[in-house]
Image (cartoon, rainbow, N blue to C red):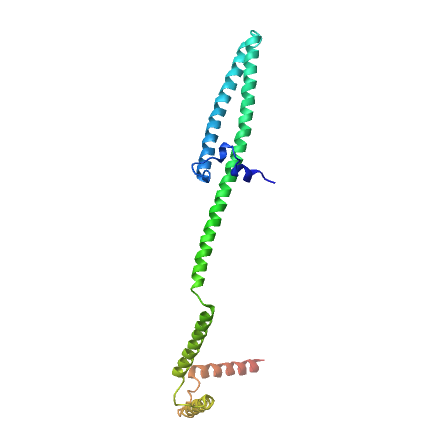
Length: 221
């Protein structure tokens, strides 16, 4: 079972349970404190990293020439690295705690706003009667039907109630009659009274010459 709720609720003598009011610190105050702690530890990290680099440089500088100074520098470097490792773990825990607190605060605000919305909907629905809504919808449907009947009555044809098929048949008869009249009035072209022109004289002379040549050729043979 998670211990986070117990941690936030606090114990009797824990300093974390004390806030400005009897109800303890607000989420905003707790988040601000956690961020301040993260910033402080981050600065401490930077300081330790600089000291580690410095001690490493001292150890390299003395090397085998002054083993005692080099060993002291390496010891200090190890202590700083241990502190740095502890700060890394503390920062991870604080980060987890801050994220959990932020999520809890967000969920609380969401729940609160959803509650407000539910109350608003309930207030709206309290002023609405389902029976009255059903009656109103029936009235609307009835008025729509009446409006449709009025529209159909206004658009209905008055008088001139003729059979459309008969009118179409009569129209076809009129068109056929008009077509027959046009065919009757069409006149074919008359045959010309003057005779067609006879064969030209030059052509007739050429035929006679050809006949004469045939006779001469027959006589010569």
